[in-house]
Length: 94
Image 1: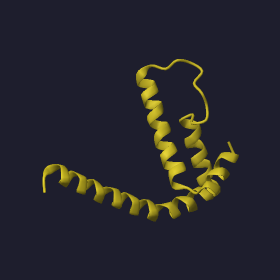
Image 2: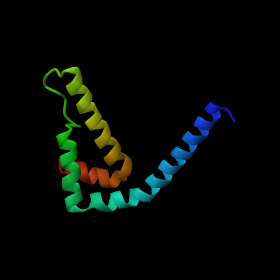
Image 3: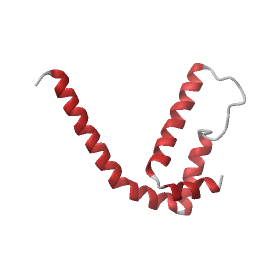
Image 4: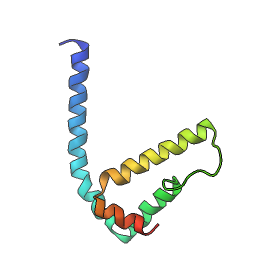
């Protein structure tokens, strides 16, 4: 097996492990973010990274990169882990 095939095989294993972990943690995230405290936390995360607002000013490249990284993290963390119904309950309180 050459180096490329080893890398592809390793990547497949990592992807399967990540998928398994996501299946295990998704019910936990739904339970946590379904509580009132969880909704408060999720809403604060969404507000802090300004996920639903447009910037009123120009940002430097560093500021823009940092903000986009925050948005990507929160978007992946919240919307990727919770069911649609739970996410709707979160954003209804914004």
